[in-house]
Image (tube, rainbow, N blue to C red; front, side):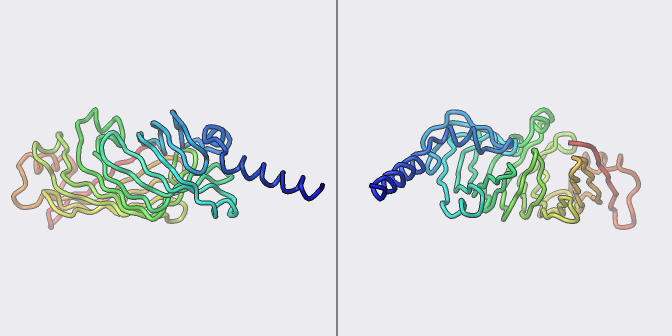
Length: 242
């Protein structure tokens, strides 16, 4: 009799585990950086109509749980979704400390979807994401390794034409998120370093020059940065708090 009871309990908990509703799992385990609506399916294989992941709006979200991650004390999913325009895919893990870990991040989306301020200032471009890893805690990146490329960058306050292509290589250094910013092509010759500290302060330092043939408006705007050195480069510094 005890043997049958044990087998029955194993079957019961097995069915419960494999059919565990995604809505319940979301309420129990989801970190603050993930907000979903329209959840259906199970914790193993489910979907959501829309949501926010680390502040980014995504639609048509789907996921599949990686069972081996449970033994490492976290829930890891292969997931994909669709921003208002473009595509995003990543492996997402929710740890017991309620941090959000992402890996194998790949995506394409318009730059103006990243933040409302970009829309308000009519800044646009085509963003490509390629990250090996990204860890978010309380809405802030705390560990990062990857690259963001912006093609066809448009800054209306600087030029009436597209400025070209640019990239930022991100890494974690001494507890800070650091990005090396560089140009790939276009009217600006730029190099800089962006530092984002855990207290949400950011600092962007670098130098920039207009390339030969750049529109006169670019040269005129760059003059506000101060005097150019012998190479024609002008230093810039932008800082603030997110």
